[in-house]
Length: 139
Image (spheres, rainbow, N blue to C red):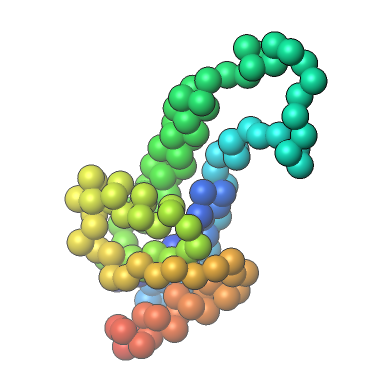
């Protein structure tokens, strides 16, 4: 049974549509990644020693990277058995995931990577179906 996967991904969530001969399954993976802390509306602090209370940028970056690693590992675990993988989404997460797949020797299964803005789950499912119908002729 051949499995094809379409994956919409950004740093916040991944929507995975797995299509087999018999069924279609949608999975949602939410990341625990938070945005970098910043000031609200450019307001400066009036506390004289606040800079000493805020953590260093590299510690925030390490935490951010750690959360992304866990997130990408969860996504890869869901798509590991797919024979064909379509990756699409709005930001840098597509390329980062591609590098992780290459590291795991799964990059040969990637059929395309596309930049596409926000989509609903129904739009994602329709895109995956349409892509594999046009390029595989099987669905």
